[in-house]
Length: 401
Image (tube, rainbow, N blue to C red):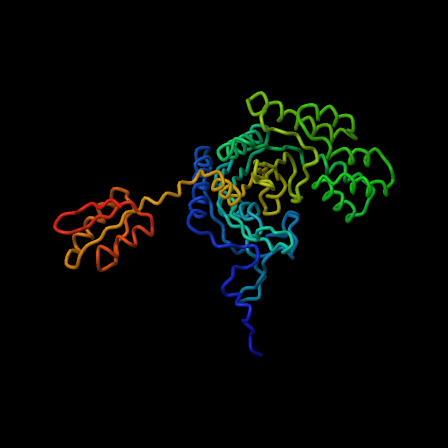
């Protein structure tokens, strides 16, 4: 059977991907350099994991990633592989194997591409560059504060108009575990809270047996704001476990507020991440001008145990592509081309080569002219908006365009 190439897919990029050109590449590097400086100054060390992993890895820890969302294929031995669909799981694998003897805490950072096979109608990227940090081997208030403050500094370096919403993963879990409902109903409730769809949330809860738990879940996504949220939350508190988690979240909030991080800090008890491996503090970061969150993270103390390393851990990931596009839109990227052209007549190639190398040594961006005549070189330089030509003869002549 002859393959039909009428659609000419070889000229297109796959759904959810794109070619990055010129200024877009510069913008991505600009953001990566900015984030890398923040991470390294705080003692983090870079790691790189393969873009291909055994699919078994992504079934660890209840990530919430469906098999349908992964790009899957097999190796020559028939073992099922997947493109990297999550950044945290590979980091946990590395920490529990090659880094198990490294002194705790292990402070790691990464720049990784993440691949998700999203439905076309969602309009989401299937390939995205993500940066992030992970701290493994230690827990507690100081570590949670370290991560949250680093998240603040990360967004503050990219925009002055941002917010970070914080919550505690156990609050929703404590309530939903006591709800008399099927697993499917509980997942639907989680999705409705995540999207703050109050009408549909109330409808599904009204169909269940009325209780203090259903009342509390109805109120949870509405508990959004500053310190007054805690007093409202204590009123729906069903048990000691819920109260102790709320106490801890309030403690973190107060310390951040008194440390000068009140602006942009919001309590959102309706913050329920899809990843089920979160066990403590969870948070999301938003920047004005970007529709979706650009930063997500939280504590995942139980995940490392799946790899035989029972140690606490916390981290966050940043959407580098979204920040790069924002930097371009805000004209933060210098797109002026300061390239110069160096031209020579036949017989003066050595002079041209020597002078070009001297310019490169000074850090000046310089192109060789491959044209036969100076007029051709000038025409090319003008099309490229170059400001200057160096004309190599017995001496070097500078031509301003």
